[in-house]
Length: 506
View 1 (cartoon, rainbow, N blue to C red):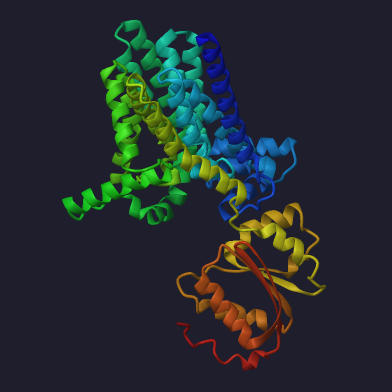
View 2: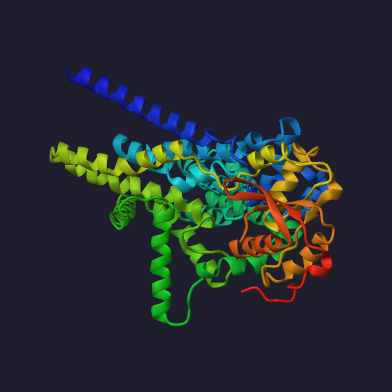
């Protein structure tokens, strides 16, 4: 009877594992092709599709070089559309889950491993970045892969594992620059794990080779990429840098930023989840697996240190999502301890209640994402409808926030929509919306029928432009989709009638 029960539980566990992995794959592929590229994705897509290889290497700064080159290679052999542009991030997301499970299964029981896999699989932001043309799911993949390979090196000390660790470290740097935090962590773990001279020689050989590659990569590419984006990035991430006005201000910033990490990674029931993670770290330390404490904590400490120099943001954001699987490893360890304690005491109902409570958030997240897949700026369906209404002689004013998406879709699908000469590329006047009036004066002098296309827009700017047009023309048609709007105006005022150009807009 016990044999049959064990066999049943084994098959039941395997069934649940297959269901979770199948659902993870499904939710990451769902809507991969249907959703339009939004601004950030379109930046990358245009760099990939409009540049030759030399230009791509020298001009790419919206995403890491190896990531851009790989996507470029994919769409060189496969169709250039949303599915294949996003395929690599999707595969990175799935690969992360597989490697994560292979690690935690060695250090926890089946139930804790299954629940932790469930939580990570349907973490909202992890699913999101597995469906987006950005490198952040790749950052998670290389984080967990390097930990896995480091564990293999420590366990077997085979030359093949050393070579794999070296190659993946080098490739990882090119795919996401946050990998340097993990490489530094792995190097420290290797140093403290081996106590014989021959192993130290291999460790320093590994470190020297990776450092040499990083130095060359930084000198010839990365420093130029950083220089182009540093000022704007520092302005964008200001709140993610330490508040050093006072000690109390710093503590408040640190606690608030750390709490945001747990929210961004979808850890349930904070601060209970924090207590479980701390318990996991304590257990790793107590059971002579101190290297896992280093794996988990050192990257976070290094990011925090970098944030003091305004070189990397600390807190709940996509830039720190690479540490999510590491924290889930500690969560799994702590959860396994709780489950084992309850099991030894034969408290099966509390175990069931615990499992149900922890499983509710990820299952709810799966249902929500499946029912309401992420849609940000649906430019493609808007252009589908627009091409049925645009007439010969019409012009299109493309708001600056819509430029990149419009450029991508115009070059790949809608080149017959309108003549290039009839496209007006809007300038950015975020500092003073009244400057749009100067631009519009020249446009309106033509007294023609003109479309205004908005996407990724600031409402104050859209409102100013719309009000300006409404005073000098008639709104003939409005087409809208998620995050994007198009207006067709028939201009009726003569240039001499434009009396309000110098009147400031409040």
